[in-house]
Amino acid sequence: MLFVPVYIIFIPIFTALVIYLFKNRYINYLALLAQAAITVLLVLYHYTYKGNYGDTLFWFGDWQTIGISLVNDEISESFLFLSVFSWWMVLIYTFEKGKTDHNFLFFLMFLQGVFLGLLQSNDLFNMFVFMELTTIIVTILIAYKKAGDSFRAGIYYLLLNTSGVLMFLIGIILLYNTFGTINVEQIGSLIHLYGEETVIRFSYVLMMGGIAVKSALFPVFTWLPRAHGVAASAISALLSGLVVKGGLYLFIRINGMYAGAAIDYTEFFYWVGAITAVVGVMFALSQKDIKQVLAYHTISQIGIVMMGLSSLHDTAMFYGGFLHIFNHALFKSLLFLGAGIIIKAYKTKKVGEIRGVMRAMPVVSVFMIIGMLSITGAPFFFWFISKSIIKYGIMDSGIKYWILFVVNIGTATSFIKLSQIFFGQKRMTIRLKRLPQRITLMTLAFACVALGNFYIQIGEGFFGLPLQEVTVADWAALFDYALALSIGLAFYKLVIEPDYKPVRYIRNFQMSFETANYLFVVFLVVMTVYFVVL
Image 1: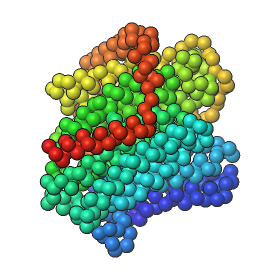
Image 2 (image 1 turned 90 degrees about the horizontal axis):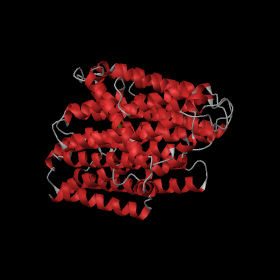
Image 3 (image 1 turned 30 degrees about the horizontal axis):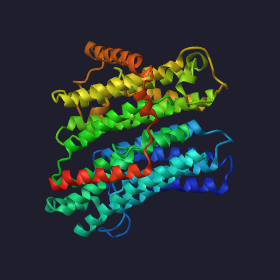
Image 4 (image 1 turned 180 degrees about the vertical axis):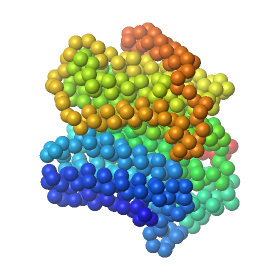
């Protein structure tokens, strides 16, 4: 069992190579077989080391200062299971018996191996390598359609994320120069000796800068809507549901390493998350492209996650943000994959040109509505649970509570606007019937509902977190949700539907690569002042 972390990294990578070399319709089934093998190995690994994660440390060779090592705990295992599940969904959704693109499968499986490696890395340089590989492969998948706009979005993503990864690397260099090791655990055990030194705090600033780009936090989020706008819906689901969460995972991991340095990041990253949430929902409200609406809501939801994860002193609030990572992965994958089916049938991404989906595709419509109920925080859904935990943590904080309330109203408004696609006369161009795609949507929809109703068992079983105080069936919760929908409907009718000039201005706003880099530098300067100078 000790070698399982290595196996689950290299099985998808070797599978990708075999698929690419042979390019045979029957070889494509190897991807499903490999996915099954990874799933079984991960389940066995979990039951072998559950509660005894100290034994999971794996070293390559005897170089325990600069060598490659892998390690797992409850957090990394949770992400591993989420990753494997997400890849299952995308594989089933895109798999066609003899028509699956071999090159697409190659990049998809290779990316899985790299991402699973990132989640298990216990040395900083290995993290950097996996981050860079992830960036390159995602760039290829964004530009996979080989159209002009996809190339531009891919290059934008590549350059901006490479800037972030470069800052991460410089931070690693500063730490290695100080400690003589790149091992996360070893640095974490020594960092309290140097916590007040400027070089340590500056390395923190650089690494958080790189993580902010990966996580699409304000103000370095501009790559995400560009990427979603041109990528295939399956890739958008993977990017939004999982890959962008790699940055949030690194936020947890790196802050754990710096714990001994006593860096209080709670207020700073709470407000970064809050601004990200507000800006994301503001842009989402102005969009008329169904994928852009979903893309900007990814930014907004990432902001809400950061509002929870930034809590250094409130464990429950931290786990509220942590649980929302998984919640968001489920409903956003469901929405992007469902949107992909609708876009292909109607041959348009414009919300105003899509009507009668409920009559044309009743099954897909039901699953999409479940996704919309989830993202708007309806009771009996998992987002209601994670949102409530975060809300309880800031209930007495005045402005912080109202920011979350405003974001909820904006989210409700967006999906009231989006729900118009279900009504009216059919306008679809072609009729699509693919059972694997419906199975994927059904599985994700079931997960959204199931997790929202078995949250107590999940909280206690996986994280030891008592969630009995969060109730999904009281009248107060239903009233709050009805109030949010009512205000959202009024706001849509009075402000968004008339499409006033400010709304059009926000929708048409585009940030150049140069401006994005200027803002990245400003962000680094602000962090330097906050964490180093003050």
